[in-house]
Image (tube, rainbow, N blue to C red; front, side, top):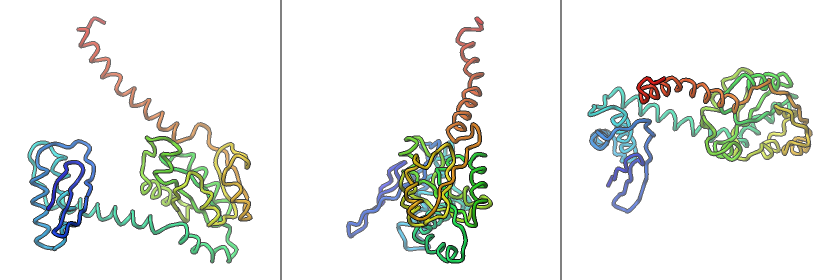
Length: 273
């Protein structure tokens, strides 16, 4: 039995009483027409080629999400459905890869480098909206040694640090952007608010921090010293922060909406001003 749940996905129940809930991808502007028909058609089409009800239901959800993103009645083409299924599979694989690149595995990878005399540099951050300040910090950090490892806060830890509306970008996107930068050798996620446990495991020679910190202000400073490393503070570029970027975007959005607001007020006042 498959029970569709609108924007919440689908609930599956088999003859043995096993239950399974499959969420659906969020749709920015969902319409009310076509979800059920598209889900059912794609579900049974998938079952004609593979006896896997779970994957068939996922394909049905993919088709439904395409249908409700369009106005009025719309058919879901083979090309659109194939593209959506491929994108979902890629995202699932990417998330699995992030889960496998954990700190323990990275520590094992880095140990031969350490034995060979390489200097390990570590820095960390949320890297929510990448800006020039981040690039400056990472470039300066890379010049201090041979291998640069960047720790990135998980979504949950970023929310605890920055509030419920952050991060703007999810962990997978933030890690992908940082890892694409020249000079960054490894990117590893961590779940805590501070990278203390990660530092104890990786034992970097230098821990780089951006800002106006002093050693005694850093919760992780003790872990760095325990590992025989040192803390290096790199001043941030003036005025460059993710919060400042977000505020600037918000102000620009308000200015762009202002002319529409003025027009509506003039219409209501019948041109009185």
